[in-house]
Length: 422
Image (cartoon, rainbow, N blue to C red):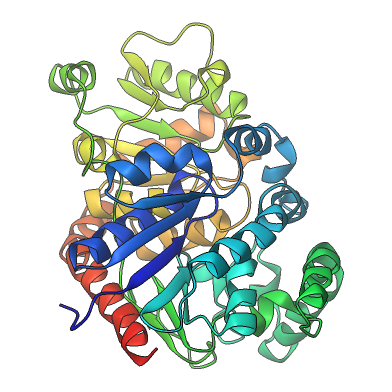
């Protein structure tokens, strides 16, 4: 437990899979006596308040839903620019201004993802202590064991001496042109020098970086930036603040374990995914659960034994599933590991290809690229995964290594250490 409490601002940018771990972290810090303020899209205000956190809004409900309606955010190569334009860049100034309003010289700090550029600027301009909290190992560059940014895995295929050139090329051609104009203009207003290569070293706090994932999932590399400490998956999924509905409980209790399908809480363009998934259930004669907040993506008629629910905490449904087909978001992947359920990942963009590859390397599942997610291929792949003794064994062997309480305690202790130094 901390020797003295403080005020900790936690920034959560993105969809539910990005915000949930930060809410879990905030709730754990609050239990340890700290005053915690969550900065996130206003759609997450009710969730933050149910978790007992103070709340500051970053963008409106309308802006959040407009972002999800843009299909460009899921494009394998143009997705980063779309996310930056719609979500990251508009949050830079508000994030900085909220931090500046809460700032005090002692007993206050910020925990934020690297993409919360306003928090990094506040650290430079105001001296606010900052811990960068990464949810995904794809955020940590390495030439020795580089993360996978898509398929084909170009950087993984390159000889190690050329991987640095790959990162430099990506920064110069893809990343900096999107970020530099608006961010550097704001920095100039504050009297700060311009930045280049935003996603190389600059976006990490030089004070502390915490990875909310375990070492077995992403072994630390000698060429990671300094001051990186891994804690583990927090596995916070709203089961702590909501109960399972009688409708869901009744379905799960009255038949064989279902196949569970989701394209992610932020996916509003998954028509093909759910059409194929319905045919998979029909062909296998399997019960199924489709999880999406956008039911307009679903086929007009679902097969018998297939149900749609807007949201069910993964920790409540996945331990009772036969297999799990999903998009490969880090929070979803972690929940599947904690449930010990075989996974079939259908990755699109961002961190999803890297998570898909890690799932396969761990032996707990496989992946199919979206163009190969057809009824015939998916049926055969699921049959193989469900029948595989080695997959079941790998799933069981990882279960004892999933310890969310220890993960949150480790992350909190690291954050409190920086708070004490401040």
